[in-house]
Length: 164
Image (cartoon, rainbow, N blue to C red; front, top):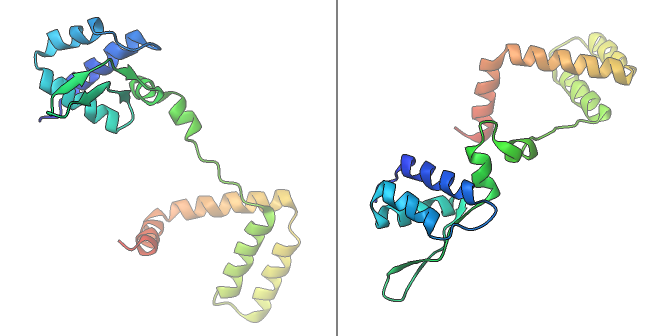
């Protein structure tokens, strides 16, 4: 079976036209007439279902014959067709929040691990512990920016962390 991206798009677009209902054969026949091969349609419907983009409506009899009862596009399928990714992209956004104490602890740990004279370490640690929340936030932004300026080093570190 050949995965057919053009057929998959036609299936998804046809099902989008019927949304929120199921395709009641006449819409499916429209796809069928344009593609001409039942087996390819069934295979691509199942493939799209495995990716959560449609409910295929395909079931198999004991003899292995495919039976079709009507397909429907899922929310993920609708979002897939949207240029902006739909609600999936909005809801899939990950927000990372770090508490001020966590940022402070990370900075203190870096200073402690640094190869610096004890007096300089002590001064830095004292300054970090007395930073206001706003000053800490600004320092964290600048540190992240500096880290991004060293992206090749970050990529090497990431490879080490995940074992590649």
